[in-house]
Length: 346
Image (cartoon, rainbow, N blue to C red; front, side):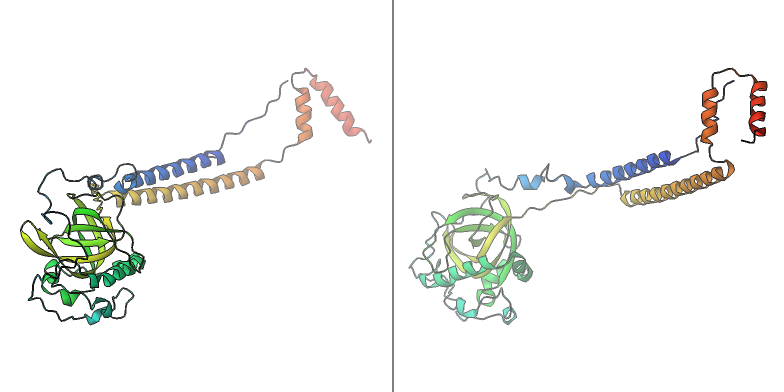
């Protein structure tokens, strides 16, 4: 006689299956999020730089693209030549009252020695020149960007330099020449300087002259370059210079740093399905969570019903049955022994 255990059918979606299902849902959610993250172009800028960034440091190979600023070397910044350039420029200094009361403002007394009627920079302007360079170098970049004006054009400075002298301006343009500039001994600790000639959309072929104490390493150097740049600087004066076409004037700005103007253009995906994908993933995940919760509750109810329906296992009876397995017994003899044990008072 052989006694075997009757195996119960495995419950549908037991605890192990539920864990696997939850793992699949988590994996699917991760894949959807990874797809959305990988679809963003800015995610891969560390691997593949933007096209316009890689082209900014390449100097121009064509001749004539940069305006003819000077026939020879740049004029001495502190020459002693008092040659007047334009006697019709008013010498009266006017100060914009809107600049009063900010850490970025230039005190009017710093600008008293500035005169636009002479070519280049005069010796008595050197103190204000280096003082303003040292001042802007100590200011916070965010503070400068916050207070810099973007509404002043090249033509405004050419026609009304006294009105805007000392104004903090924000410029974006194309650098045409970037060269190191000699400095003289000064009490403000300015030892390095660079001159950057740029053109902007409003200036056309008429340049701006920028003197800065710091230059971004990504920018090229040379007589003929073509690099988009941005900067924040104080308008100091009209700088007169000699060129092939005669004498010209350019607004001179004193800045702390000139940086490349890198504009990252993000191409649209064109699908417009991102919101629907996110909504579908959210609904799918929520529905799956409800389904798993319902299966877990049903599994709990099933275990409770089975525990009430069947008695706990009798280990002694099971041990006896295991010992009897594979042996032959006389049922009559077994019944007699059971009857004797039952009637035995001991």
